Length: 457
Image (cartoon, rainbow, N blue to C red; front, side):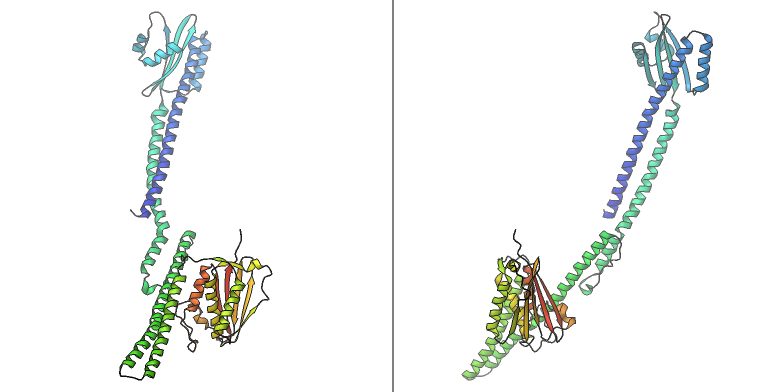
């Protein structure tokens, strides 16, 4: 059964159940009250009858009877009985003569007052003592309200319940169809999306906040999936090229060397070329493996309390040894006075690798022009900014700089594999930080690294 049908039936069942319970309750209490009210009316007539039957003075009795007939509604099949009890009168004789219910007569004689119902005929009676004589005054009548009005109420409630059942079920199916219509539209739209047209997105014009949130969430998921697909395609394309180039060079160099006998010098030169390409292949492979490891969010790394300025100085010393011609300057003007605002929880080796990649790129793509490093801090994070005066990155290519093996179109004259920046971003992510790159073509690049402070409890 479809969810839409289940919801409609559930709503209908709940509403109908409430209406039925309400109707039964109304009928029960009205029916009960009608009995109580009718008994009171009979008892009032018993009291009035005792006055004009037993009170002395025919004039007064006639007046009471006249007032009773004038002001009291005549009940259906109403009868009055005045029975004088004597030694010959018994319960059986009364029952046989007047056809009263036996329980009613017994209670009346024992307690002096009684009410009873037999079918649609109601009885009320009282025992009176007058001039040392005992009289029973009994009034009987049919309850017209029960026989007619309650029957009408019952039929009306049944008709009302039937109408409500039809109305509620119809409205339930209508509203459930209306509520599920956006979801059905989403399902139809999602069925149209595949790997060939993954650029399609759901229309978020729906005003329903929950449905709109669902659409935005799904569109965001599609954005991430599309990015993953594009990254995957770029990775395969670039990886096959980067790995294929040194392999082709190694195989070609070996084939050429084996075509004919050569001099020792030629073999040495050929082995040097093979060794160079093999080393390049080894670097690419290691970089790919390390990139995959750092991209795994649940990978356990050892974190310790370290000072970010110490990491920067240690990284600069490494760069100075590898590239003595660099012009890296660490600007201390923004350095916080409180040393606690320089401490983070991180892995020293990974952070040195990340900052080494950033500083190497700054020096390489600026041809060893001035590179400035700023260290600043806020109440919640440390901000390291690296500025260079290099070739910059074309604006249209900035969204792709974190794709493995991607290299900007203006970097063909510079060596590299396009792995350093994606690797750096993964390291920063492992430290719950952010990597922000801003660049202007032929004017330089500014990289910001934001890492949360180490907050002591």
